Length: 217
Image (cartoon, rainbow, N blue to C red):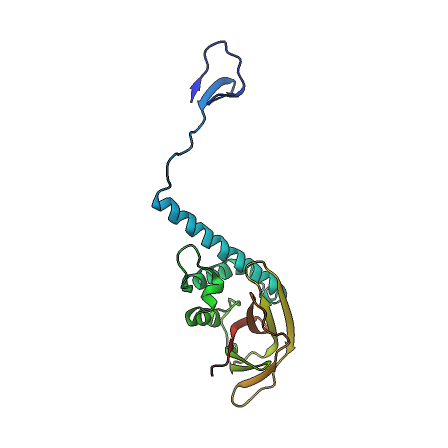
């Protein structure tokens, strides 16, 4: 950057120089030149990381939007940060090559499913029930629950496309308590390609869920 001392009356860009006024002084500076040549490996890796991070952030937003009513009851202004962190943890479980890892791929692994199962949308500690697993078989789901002092007020059946945000949801009433903590639930939706199938239990100040898995033969 330099000061203009001649009688030139330029303003704006002229060639590779830009002329302007700053505090009454005529200033000229050169336009920054673009880097030429192939990208370095560090630049390529950075682009891949940015792509994966953007996909994870988008997936987190889509999940929160699909669970808007349930998340609102948590009354946590920073819930989006924890959900975004959840998506990054799920992405890390994806076995795809670098640059192609997504939370969707992570949820297809046992490690990713365990991370979601242990994640709580509520930030408060207490004796809350927990949904340990949900196994689909012939239109029904067998839910394995761990009891808590708080009561389950309802179950949310959710199928969501974490890439584009499209979703469909059905609310089920609170399950009937079972001595073996196994509840049979009639599912409202069939499997849909490209959609992740989830079940969530919720009640006063708690929300937690799992991936609906297929029965193992």
